[in-house]
Length: 435
Image (cartoon, rainbow, N blue to C red; front, side, top):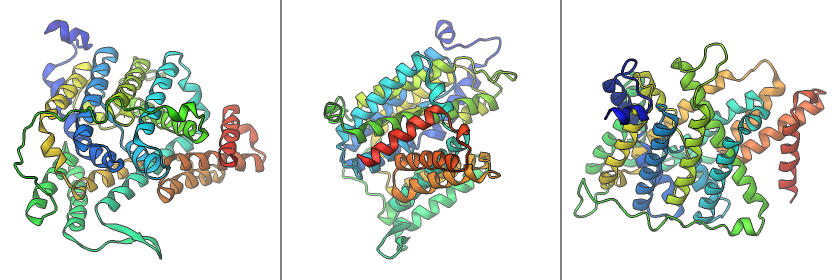
C-alpha cells in the first residue's frame, strides 16, 4: 500500500488518504454525467451506444491512470464535452465524414499532441493565438453545446421562418426544462455531483411519463458491452487522398484540446495554490499534458472522441485533492461504473439536456476576461462566438474569428500586434476556402 501511495506522489506528512479518496469521489460524481451524455451524442453517428459506453469508461480510466501515476496530479480525464459534439454533429453529420474517418482524425491529433508535448512546442502554438480569442473559444463552445442540449430535449425545434423556435410542451420537453432548473438549483447550493443527481432524478421521473423507455428484462447490473463494434475501426483513407479539409479538422481538434487542457490545468492549479506564486510555473504541467495526449490516442483506438482534462476536477481539488491518489480514485470509480451500463444507457435525451445546458453556462464564464475596451479585439471574439452555434461548427468559428482578427488589425494599421504564426494560419485558412 505504501509503495502504491509513493507512486502516486502521496506524502503521509502532507496529505490524507481520506481527503484524497473523498476528493476523487467528488470529482467522479461531478463529471460522471459524461457516461450518459457521451454515448447519446456519439451515438447520433450510428455508433453502437453500448460499445460507446464501454469506450468512454475505458478511455477515461486509462487517461486518468496515466495522470495519476505519471503526472501524479489530481486531475481526471474523459472524452471532452464540446469536442464530442464537434465529432458527431460537425465532422460526421454535417461534413459527411464517416465515424471511422473521424476516429482516425482524433488518433492523428493525439499523436501530434504527443510530439508537440515531447518537443515542448505547444506553448508557441497557443501563445500565437491572441488571449481574447482564446477566451472566446470557450464561450462559443458553451453556446454550441447548450444549443444542442435544448434541441435534443425538444425545447427548441427547427423552423423554416426563424431557423429555430420554441418546441411543443410535451412530457419530454417539460422534463428537460425541469432538469435545467433542478440542476441550476443544486449547483447554486454547491451540491457535489449536482448534474449527476439531476440526470438520475429526471430519468426516474421519466419512467411513469413514458419518456424513459425501460427495455424488457431490464437489470441494473450487467457485464460490460464489448467495444469490438467501434474499437480499432480507424479509416486513414482521407490522409492518403490528401483531403485539405480533413487536415483542417485535425488542426481544429488539436487546437481545442490544447486550449481545453491548458486552461483547466492552469486555472485549477493556480486557484488551488499549486502554481508558483511568482512565476506561475506549474510543476508537472508537461506530464499532465502528456497524459492528455496519451488518453486521446488510446481513446481513438477504443472508439471515442478526444479525451481531455475535465474542469470538474476543480471540485475534487477544492475538496483537498492534491496528488495522484485523487485521480487514481476517479479511475477506479470509472471502472466500477463499467458494470452498470444498463442504467446509463436508458437515460433519455430529456435528462441529459440539463448537463449540456448547464456545462455550457459554466463555459461562458471566460467572457468576463475578454477586453471590451478595444473593439478591434471585441469584434473578432463576437464573430467567433456567434459563428459556432449558428453554423453548428466549432472549426468555422475559430477560422472566422482568426481571419477577422488579422483583417481588422491590418486595416487599422495595427499589423504589428499580429504574430507571424497568425499570418501563416490566416493564409492557410484563406486557401481552405478558396480550394
